[in-house]
Image (cartoon, rainbow, N blue to C red):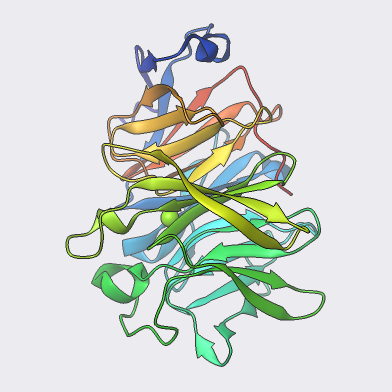
Length: 311
Ligand code: MG
């Protein structure tokens, strides 16, 4: 009846020959399951070879594994969005509803707040999160949980801006690191953590802005950002979420699938996905499988590269 996974061939579009070795085996795109409204924030769980992700308008998290197929993992999750594994194995969740980053054990139990305000003001709607090798937690805070009715509880911005934050669990310090992107959304470090990439999706909604680009910053002293510059425009659509591979290439969501961008700014090619794409994560035992959260469905494609080892 379900017929999953569904195999889609011919999805690879090469714009630059440097991409060819990564897709020389001509991998198909596989549609693994469907049933979400808007899929975001996939995270690979190596312990049981599964992917967890957010279905934001349904206020739930979903789980897929080859063994078990798709299931509802947690409900009434306070509109989680992006996720990351922390260094201790726990799971970090961005929550539009709580206007916070919270933590659970990897089985979803033992929920506790990580950080929920800066200078006494609640965040807007934490969107995506990464953990640096020094244990600090970096996350973006655009307005979407406040202004999209089905993605949160609504409300007004107490901070009055959309910032990227660095939280140091050791000291409890919360520091904004940039206000350059209008609507900071996805973020990821380069493999050597000398660069931080942040996407800007202010063009996603009418009347909000016009950006659909990636910014890149130099990471100074491991803790501050400098020299922010627009790095690449992504179109059609916006670069909602992205991950890097071990050679520093960027795999970003877009309206028409995943765009692969070289650190020199060149669009190397596209992996065409038949649904608007929200976010990606590398997984699999070799970390060579790109899992793609795209609207109603979860997809995957096996590449001849490896994702940056995030904790
Ligand atoms: Mg996002």
